[in-house]
Amino acid sequence: MYCTVNGEKAFAYTGSRPSIDGQPNIIFVHGAGMDHTVWVMQTRYFAHHGYNVFAVDLPGHGRSEG
Image (cartoon, rainbow, N blue to C red; front, side, top):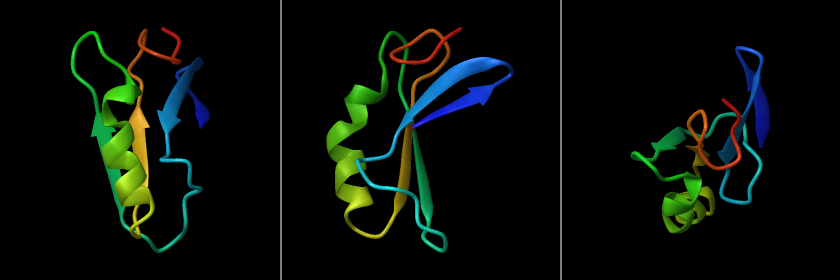
């Protein structure tokens, strides 16, 4: 999922599921030199078990600009 933050394109992986209103949200943030792919297994698990998940790519990492 892409969105714009301060004029820059930012990416967040959602575990291959759309967000559903009313479900709790979990946000995964990677460490230095990494991207959203370090959270693939965790995000897919929670996305398929009743949570909205967002594994963000910080600016200049993965699919995010900046």
